[in-house]
Length: 389
Image 1 (tube, rainbow, N blue to C red):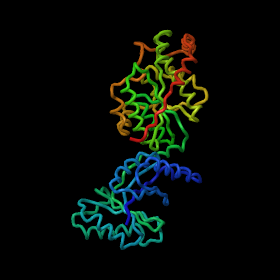
Image 2 (image 1 turned 45 degrees about the vertical axis):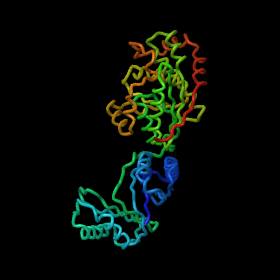
Image 3 (image 1 turned 90 degrees about the horizontal axis):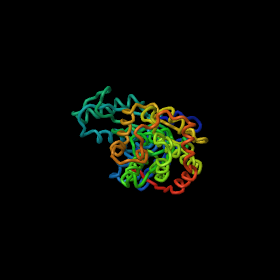
């Protein structure tokens, strides 16, 4: 008898001959996320299994695994040899102190085991009722389910609890992307959405110290820790100073273009970093029409500077409340609403341009030593590696 954690995957099952690639990717992500915990991850038919851990770490292991993209569900289970009498004995032991309603579900991957799944579930239900008078059968809406997973490896896994994962595809199976991470609500959610679709994330954060505080930076690092939970256990952040650039904009350019010019510089830096680090996409938390810099005209003019890298905007059509709900689900909302400013709140005009024309923006950029300022900011980038929270 052995305590294990069973891990099931969902969408990966839809893959054909390349399914092994996705399975290996998910296994590696789970192993990376569990670094520091004394346990081993094994592949069994249609499942992963974690074993060899300290029982005190079981819930922590579950909490980590359910945040790995590609995981459908997780169950703490007891593993025994596939033997009818052993199964009956363990089921009696697991249910002897339970009260309420239940049902038994048998999954018989090993077709050599007899009787069949439905018959064995009925037999076990009878055993449980005979052994515990405080239980009743309810096959429609039971208070708990006794699961019997009989696998081809001649092992049976028995469990009564299941924790749902985030689903999606394993991080790293759909390329690598650079998340423009601010301290707001939207960008962490955008990162989560792309990680869930298999993108391995790195992040780029722009700051304007001393106009933005050290607390604002710490806030971003804390957000990064939450994102790392869904990014196979880590997140590398590139911290880029924009202070001098913003001061030059504010001094030399028309005030209404401050945000547009700032964001064009950000995207130039982001594309340069992607090319240097081999990243395939820039990911933003932009949401159509939410603020002045996110009108279609603004997004077009800003995105115009990116020539060779794909810009991904996973939240572009989301309702704000939908974004907030996801941020609460991934535990970033309370961090995001802390009142520490980011660089986009520095030198903000009272009436920013909402429908900028490209030719006008280019004329404003001519008032700056544009390339020199970009080079200066890029040369001062610092790298911080954040581990899962």
